[in-house]
Image (cartoon, rainbow, N blue to C red; front, side):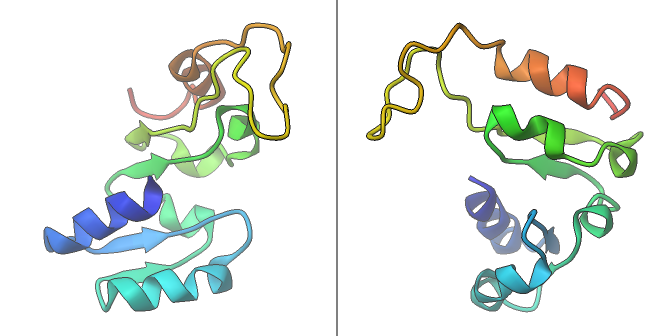
Length: 114
């Protein structure tokens, strides 16, 4: 979802700053593919943009640094895994119901602009 939004933004003439938990160097292929309107940065640097897109599994929302997002507009495209969804490795089989993605993100990023 994140790379698709980045492609759409670049196609619309916008500059994009990409980040992930593994470091800017891991995004070099995508940056090269997107061209001169894209660059990779740390999460803190990326949060300085006009708006921030968070695209991670909802269970990982606690790993998102909150301080850089204070006052920022955050768009959550989180990858929600429905309760009792079954993946090929049965990762979610018989798990208790999870909170809705939006509610969990809002609580975790309470200081971001709403």
